Amino acid sequence: MGEAEQHIHPVYSLAKAEPVLYSRYFATYRKNVWFRPSWKHVQQMMADADDCYWIMSGGIRIGGILISENTLGSLFVIPPFGFSQPIAAYLKEYIMENITGVTRIHAYNVLPEHIAAFAAEGFKPEQARKCMIRPTADTHTPSLVDQFRSKQPEPGELVQIIRLLVDAYRNSIDDRDGETFTQDILYYFENNSIDILLDASSIIVDQQSNEIVGVCFVSLWEDLPLIYEIAVAPAARGKGLAEYMLRKAIRKLDRHYDVLRLFVTTGNRAEHLYTKLEFLPGDELTSMIYSND
Image (tube, rainbow, N blue to C red; front, side, top):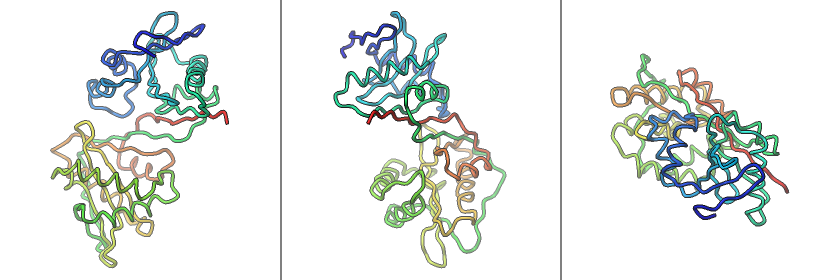
């Protein structure tokens, strides 16, 4: 659709949005469930977007959404309007009419209050994630049993690190293949070579086998630290390694940054540890899928 074109519906329509104006609305009306540090950071998400649309009703903007081929994302609604099943039905209809041969529609980053309307139109939840946050100040001093030692991550240990990650996440809700982990860790080393981040990160080595049994990588996201990856080998679980690595990161980051964030997939048993360590959860963002196969 062109800048001024609209997709007409008896009640609703879509109009292509100008990104800068759209970003102001998005930053104001989209719930900040990922603890983004400022209104400006939320706005920057959409400042260059070329797939943003206004949801219109009777010539009035009632919300906004990102539409790219067979995906819907980052929905927000402008008060006093609300999101309802008829709007979800219209968005589904729009995709089905405009994408040739589409059999599946993905709705991503669905807020809790929008799930019911999508579900009423046949969208099924796939995975939910949430951000968690806590201050970097910590009165606990982390310690390891003598069997293990902690060191900074090094790019030369990539093969062992990938082997550990594949082993740690195998058959879990966060399972990924070796190539994906490889690209993620290479990206980390290329973009986070900052002394304080590496100092706050950990490689845990079993001194008996000399094998890497734990990893924790700390990165920067929107000018604040984020747990980029954390994993413990199945054989080394229950020995306090994850808690040690997180407490170490919290203490090392103190006096440099005020807070630490991480992401957790709903159903990951590590969430219990994060709550124990005083991480506060934001709302879940759910991926949903509609299929007419």
